[in-house]
Amino acid sequence: MATPVAVQMNLHPIMNWDSDDILEAFKKFKQKTQLAFKSFLKGTTNDEKVSYILLWMGNKSLDLFNSWDMSESDCNNPETLIEEFERHLEPRLNHRIHRYEFQGLKQDPQETIDNFLSRLKNVAEKCKFKDKDERIVDQLIWGCAHKEVQKSLIGKDALQLIEAVDTARAFEATIKQVASLSLQTSSLGSSVDIVSRHRTHTRKQRTCQYCGIEHEFNNRKKCPAFGTHCKACGKLNHWEKMCRLTKSQKNKPQFSKMSGNRRRDIHAQQQNTSEEEFLAVGTINVHETRNDDQRENEAYTTIRIQKKSGRKRTNIDLRLKIDTGAQSNILPVNLYKKMFSEHMTEEDKVKEGILTPSDVILTAYGGTRIPQLGKITITGTHKGKTIKCSFYVTRTEGPAILGLNTCKKLNIVSINAEVKAAPSRIDSDMPIKDRPPITTKEELISMYSECFDDTVGCFVKC
Image (cartoon, rainbow, N blue to C red):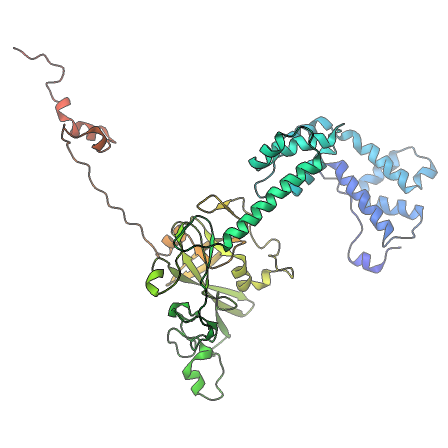
């Protein structure tokens, strides 16, 4: 008899008669049935097992069961019943169709070799190959997304499946390690073609009187409070907890009260972050930070994001690095977690269904791929203008990146183009390579008018 917990959790298997692969659906049903009889239905009799199987399989199974001419002993044997259903469903398969499907299997760019191998094995089971492992090896080579792996494997005559898989796994591990090392490597005065990580070495750490956090003091702009407004007095470049006005008043709370619902302004990089770590997308020059003038080529902006949870509203000021060379907006997952902690699981992963899956492949200037988890649309406000911004959530660290298109929509940057008219006529002595391009018939006639006057094609009288 089923336990109450099993009934409440709806653990009993269900046969999916609408599946495109009916035999595969039945095999999974059979496996779940065996698990049920070994766990919460352990100890049931054969008669009871047969009843459970027919109930779980639904009305269609009853119609088939009633049409079969089976002895009473076979009808009461659950194993015989399962075998009869399997024989009934198996003739529907056409192994040649599955072989055609098998030959077209390709590894997706973001797919691991293990997932690709699993798909190959599942389809190969339906193909009735005599040399199944050999065929899987061939398709793994032709369908592999990495040309380097193909070149390595195609020259080996006696190649076992496990050897081919190990080679592909080693290549994938190498790519991940190289990408990880690239993120941690920075050099002075060098041009970085990938997402590069830059840490400024701290000279002397002590508690800052403006933000209350320990950081180096060779650069005023390295203080997280620089450029922000105090919520107690409204002045620039310090936080409320370090405000002198607040400290001078006894028994005054360390937060400002607002009429109506209580609100908090949360800076996206205020907690557990530091201005000592930067992330950039595109080609940048990395220099050791000595003074303010050396960082004049880096630009940041802030957009206001309002998050609602019931009656509570939270204003999030997200600080972004402006990168006019980036075609997309980037939001590292560590910042996404601080902004939307309710969207994260206990394993520190984004819950399913939150992000919109995307097939877009993000690459840095040098062609290195940037792993992305999906896309999210966030409504942000900048200087009174509100737009919807699409961000790709990535497995990188550092500040968020604001691309060119969004910068133009928010009027952060503008593109000015000057149109100059081409010369109406050119000097005949001007070299052809120095002549301006001709785009219309009118320009051609204007520049070479002597070739289009009334004398062309006429005989000159002597």
